[in-house]
Length: 156
Image (tube, rainbow, N blue to C red; front, side, top):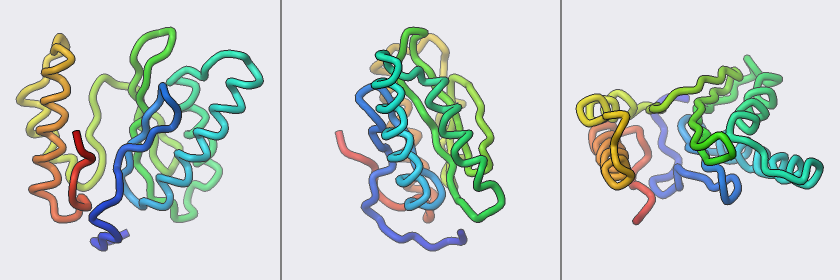
């Protein structure tokens, strides 16, 4: 993609549905398109099966969708997170269809800066408020230090 920033105001967290969120790193158009498509397919899953799609199944669905376009120039690295019957879930999916599960990820050009804050402050037993504060500080640090992270952070 290079070092071109198309917009300083793009929202980097997308609500896929009320129980799933996706993040954007890479091409904003690729990320927003595939996450919107995931939202549509998650809704179809819900209508067909009369239950919400799990975080794991949603991330696998996204991985399978983009794998078909591997090597065709997609630029996407996204985290899919949410809450389902199994509890909270966090997955990384990239434009090659790679899918990883973990308890912490940092994605995009500013991720090395964010990992510095995350590694220093992360503990598996963080309270919700402390985890939110740590995430916020890592994002602010990444966007402040990395010229290509695309600007501001979603409010609140």
